[in-house]
Image (tube, rainbow, N blue to C red; front, side, top):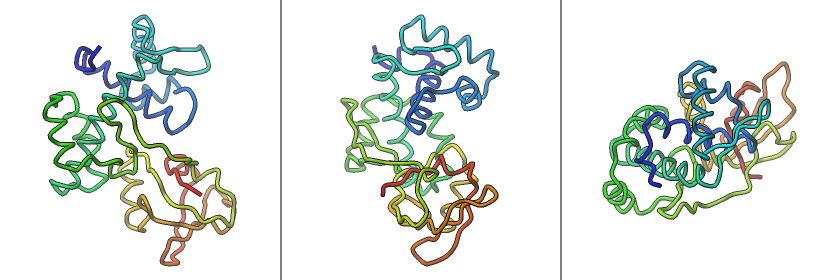
Length: 221
């Protein structure tokens, strides 16, 4: 099956499940899926049931949603489209990394395989998008790194930012204003206090980060 054989909304659900599980390392919570697709939890529940009947997802009650092998293959087609388009918008059209997500969400449904290949060729087959997320190739293969969320990093460690979740433009703008972008290094001097983690960037500046944002930032040790 090709991803364009599915309705746009179904494509959205499959990609959202992938995005959530990629960052959390576990099943996607139904409430978080509903939030990201902009629908009520009851509506999302019915959509997930339909995807289950199509054998694209597996929903374990009270445990979350995961993709089946078929669902994963389709999700990777969507992920490739989204991340290549984001990269094109930033590199060629001058978008900032906090601007690209919504437009890429719209464009990914209409782009043809030929246009996607031309974009990939033009960009020189990039391995990662502007947020550091790996871009699957045409076969679904993509580079992997041993990454950890910033929330798991022990005090005193110096790490390199690998990926930042692109779903929160405000967070992206805040991080960029302090030079906290993929491939930048930062140090965690001490544990979080009162819900705030103080980190130090390569210039020696101290930047406060809320604990709620740490799961959106993935780093390599």
